[in-house]
Each structure stands twice: as C-alpha cells, then as structure tokens.
Amino acid sequence: MVKRPHYRAGYTLKLITPFLKAFAVTNQQIEAYSSNNILLIRGAKEMLQRVQEIMPAFIVSTSYEQYLAALCSLTGFPSENVDCTKLDLDKYPLSSVRERPFNSSKRRSPLYL
Image 1: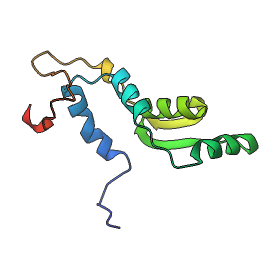
Image 2: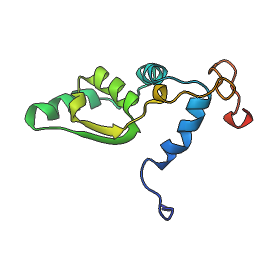
Image 3: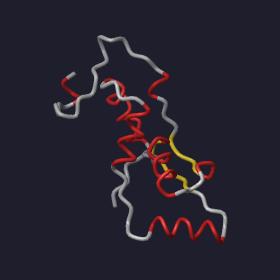
Image 4: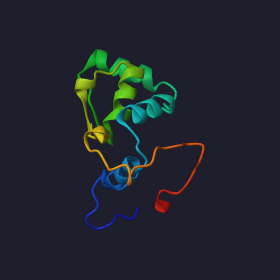
C-alpha cells in the first residue's frame, strides 16, 4: 500500500464538497441518495444489533453525516454513538451564477462548470 505524505483519512471528502455545492446538492439529497444506495455485507445488520446487546458499540467514520444517518436508520444503530464527518451544504449559499441544479440524467463532468 502506498501512503501519500501528509495524507489523513477524510481528505478526499474535502475535495468532493465544492462539486456537490456547485451542483446545488442539498443535505436531504445526500441522505436520500445514501438511503437508496447502502450496501451491507450479509449479516452486518444483525451483527451490529448483536454487538449492541453485549457491549457498548460505536461507529467512527470519515463518511459524511448524511450517510451515517441513513445507515443508522436502516440498522437501528443509535446515532448518538456515531462520530463522522460533519457536512452542512445547506448552510453556505452560492450565488445563482455559480450554482447549477444537479440533474443525474445529464452526466457532465463537474470540471465543465
């Protein structure tokens, strides 16, 4: 495995955020997308529930909080036992000149804004 100097877990998410904002993606859209696209390995949901029965369980992840909210909703895992990357796209408005509504039917590279 090659490790880049000065790289820390979660840096990639910082690179994605401006593109999400440029395409007018909202917090609710990220959570809806996450809810519809969660893939769990067989038995993961049951294992999370079983572990919680026998000891305190926690999830520490660099994933965005909207994904973890969807995961907690699906698995019944307590959201107060999750630490993840906070992201509030709705908090920071962009001018309408810079922002484009996201249309998944028109797949364009974000580099061609």
